[in-house]
Image (cartoon, rainbow, N blue to C red; front, top):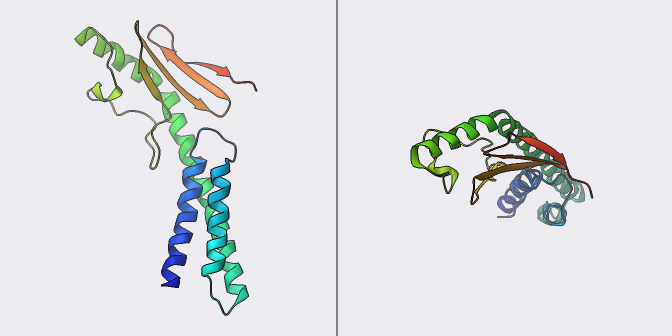
Length: 163
């Protein structure tokens, strides 16, 4: 049972790193630090009670798996934001076609027939967000301190966010 719990903790460490790095805010959040700490502590406690070396090895492995997940989550986020940048005009075209067919912009992206929404990710939603407004729509996503926006009248533009 102890080994099974240790495997679960190690898997949680990997998934936790992947999930928390997938956030568009590139800083280390308090929940990420808590999950990392809990996983490392749990791995240490669930390691072999007879061998301090094995327990420390399990704790280090949990930390390494969190770091691997963090790296992979960052790669996925980078690919998703690149997909959003490359396909923003395709989305704007699909929105314009929808308006031409129906007379209004869709209430949600799900109404866009034949368009796969850019930036699909494993554990999180696409970074590209859509909101219908009274007179059009707003598309946006963030990449660190950069805010990308587009409307029915303006193509994708970037603005740097200052503290």
